[in-house]
Length: 76
Length: 147
Image (cartoon, rainbow over all chains, first blue to last red; front, side, top):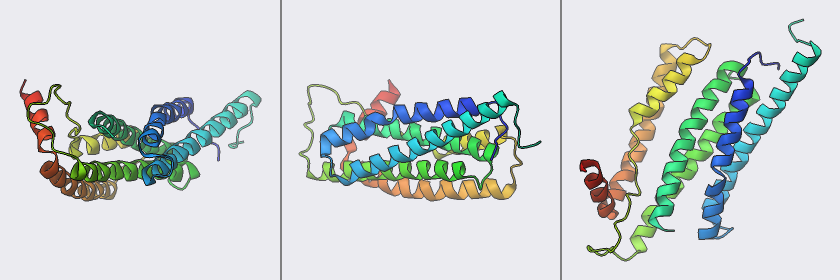
């Protein structure tokens, strides 16, 4: 799907920022509770889901920019 | 886990929940509710909320096994629990929807209110338990608010 939005870069940046700003949560929980604790697994799940969101947005953004560069559009 | 750890976790996860919700609404508006990105966003919000709930439960359990804090503690402890009003959260989400290039129906708003109500009732139950076991933190927050 080609998402027509000039703010896609902004959304991608926000997702990356969110992922970065929550990185220390898992680190703190691991240091305090140990790697096997249930909360650490939940924190890892949270981080993984944010990472997936950021990655998908990045891919979509790159695809969007590629379409713009090559002049290809799914509308055509 | 120290009280400052809990304070950091509550603050960071609450902010992350708001930001992820706003991001998900924006993504859904642009890519469509059926797009994989919308699912990823919803999943991220759910995971943040789940972790936030688990951290609250841990705070309760830890307080149950901890020794009572002395009345004359040498260093005043910063409040670990920040109040986050459901209305502000709802308004943030509605504003995010209103900025999105999609039509917002009454049904959508009703669904959002219902979700907030359920989350509020769950949080209220947890907060009541926390008040019983962490009374000094609520006292500190009240003093801070008055000053």
